Image (cartoon, rainbow, N blue to C red; front, side, top):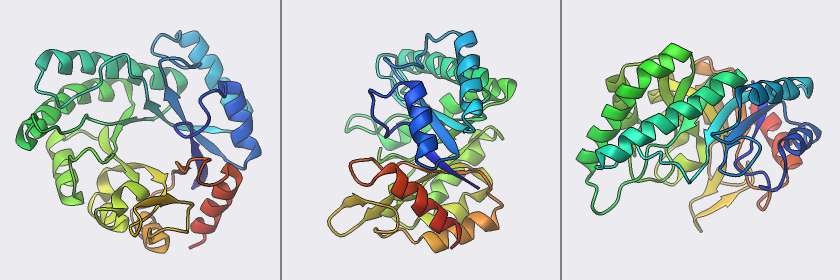
Length: 265
C-alpha cells in the first residue's frame, strides 16, 4: 500500500507543479488528481499536455492513483429524470475517462448525482443503473475503472444495496470508491469492505466523530481503522490509501504520518 493525497482538498490556487512538489515534500507516494473548470487539468486539456503532466508526476516519484471530475460547468448527473441531461452527462463522463486514459490513471472517481424531493428513489436507481450499464462498455474498451463514491447524496445507503447495484451493472470496470469517513455517520466502514470487497477499487481515508457531527484528523474520530485495515487485507487490497483530510483540519504532513501508523495496525 502507498500513502496517497487527494487534490480535492489541496488549495485551489496551487498549480499542478506546486501540488506535486508539496505532496512529495509532505511525505506522500501517490496522488489523486482532479479535473476542474479552471485548473491545469480541464476537460479541454490536450492529450499531449496530459501525457507530459503524467511524466512530470513520475519524475517526482508520485503514482497517479486516481482522478476525480470536480468541474461544475458541464453536466455529470447520471440519475436525473431528465433523459437529455443524462445523455449529456454520459458524454461528459466519457471525456473525463479519456483524460484518465491519457494520463495512465487506472481509476476515475464518480458520483452519480443526488436525490431530491422530486426525484424518487426508485426512479433514481433505475436511471443510475441504466446510465452505468451504458457507460460500462466504454470503460471496458479504454481500460479505465469507474469507482462510484457514496457522498451523502441519500443514494445507495448500505453496503448490501451498493453491492447489489454493482452486481446489476455487471462490469469488472465499475465498482466502489471506498471512503472511511463518508460511511461512519450511517454505519461502520469495515462492513463496506467485507460486503463490497469484490467491487472495491480505491480507498479514501477520512475520520469522523459522530458526537458533534464533525470531521477530525485521522485517528481522532470514530473510524475503527484496525478493523478497516483487517478487512482490506482480507480482500488483498494493495492500492493507495488516499487522504482526503482538509488542511484546515490537519496538516498534510501529519496525515501522511497518520496513514503510515494505520498501515501498521
